[in-house]
Amino acid sequence: MEDNCCCHDKKTIRSEEERKKLINRLSRIEGQIRGIRTMVENDAYCNDILTQSAAVNAAVNAFSRELIGSHLKGCVARDLRDGNDDVIDELLDTLKKMMK
Image (cartoon, rainbow, N blue to C red; front, side):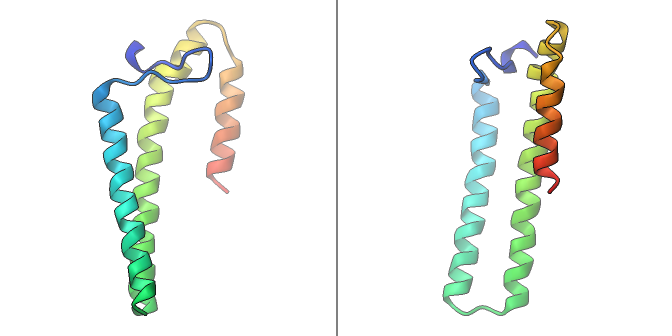
């Protein structure tokens, strides 16, 4: 998946399709967050807000899974093939942060 490789200056070159897919997910998440804000402003029932909050968490997790998959298949695989084992420690540190 060479199109999705990280460059050595810590950037990732994504295809237009992948970029659009990620941005669409983020736009949906933004909309969900705005909806929650409106619910709070309108004094919506706590349980209804919590339900929407859970939906946002699920959407963020789905975004992260998509990005991790792309990172593993592209950046990490390429770096390992090139002999750069430091990418493993970098990924482990990132996963630790995500699992807090």
